[in-house]
Length: 309
Image (cartoon, rainbow, N blue to C red; front, side):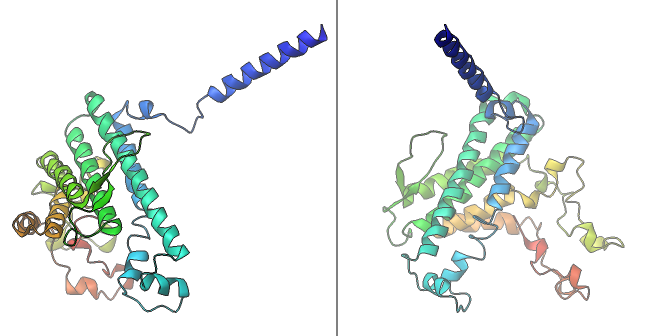
């Protein structure tokens, strides 16, 4: 009798444990739940930007770390950095950072692909121009990340356009994506950017004549000089503010100009560069801003000239 009692207790315990493990943690949101609302799409897209800003990507490795070291922009006494500077691809630190870049970039791309899949199936929850904005930004981000991965991990187009390059991942799947050639990757990058341009053209607030690029108000606590008055935060909707902090219409044009130049297509490169230049949206940084006597207000990054950042 005792044996049967023990068996019953064990079965009930296992059943309760299974139910406990099946409970969704309160801090977690499933993909299906996330994309049921417009705010969920915005949060998912912001999550991609946050990932890109981490040290593994543009918050470190892809701005002032390995790439700058390999470009020999600085002098180093540190042995590991000198090995990277000498293109010693067997160095452990170099391998670790390269693996980190690869993994983080494809994680971001995977999240982008989740957004791009859901934006079609749940289009009805997106209002105004948000379908075009979200899909356009996502496509431009996917292209941008793949282009940087191509330049880091593949032979150059000039040397070997038909060489095996990187996987161009466009779907969410547990199966690995086959490698594409350099030419194939560039063509897919261009296709994504062209579609992004079409979606953002007419939908992106940065195109409005009333959208004026400039400094945040904290730079001019006494009020903006009229000639440099900014309207980048004028929208009552946070998602539509500071479009230069996101992939915008001119980001797509500027990136296309770079990609075409990399491919040797000077005609299309110039055409896309001129779309940015002719917009006259991005004024030169004024000398008085660069040499501002107030060090806290000194513009060290040429802020008005930034298209995306």
